[in-house]
Length: 218
Image (cartoon, rainbow, N blue to C red; front, side, top):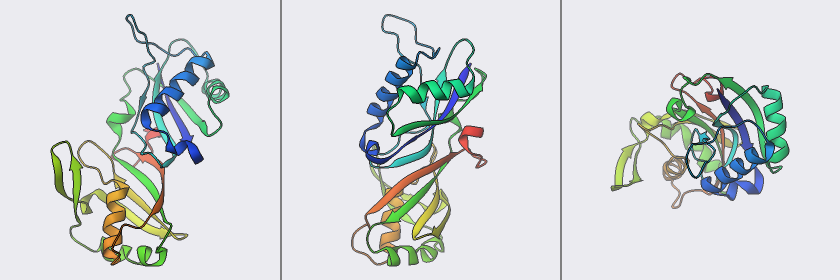
């Protein structure tokens, strides 16, 4: 069996990198005494996987990971024992057992919802959103392993609107196409006529599959 686990990471722990987060989760799972599964061989390790790395400096409200396990464990017991072993700023929110044949969260991932809150020039930044979305194409330079590549962001922006002084943006996040928040922020800042990208507080609020069903339910 596998457990689909939803967790949050907040406040100052948003500044740890993905590998540090993975190590923290592995240590917590070991301390919890949960019947998690280890790899075979001379150096056994926990076989956990995350739907998508979280960028340094970004909070995650409903991050998703997969934890293979053996034996029987109730979801509520899994959540309680894992939270007892985790630091206070990382919280397990929910857990759902699935069969071994269930696709990995990473394979199902297609989009993410972000809250992008400008820390400066907020009025101009938010006011430019309708004009940005009205464009047929939004060209941007994206860094890849082969160097800088020009990409059209418009098909990768599924939805965006203003709420309480922040931009809520549903952006593509998959192996076939991704619109990173920093590219979206740069494009919107340019549309607002600003010389530099507006500094923003970015929170990843949820992850979705291609049908825009929350990943934790897919």
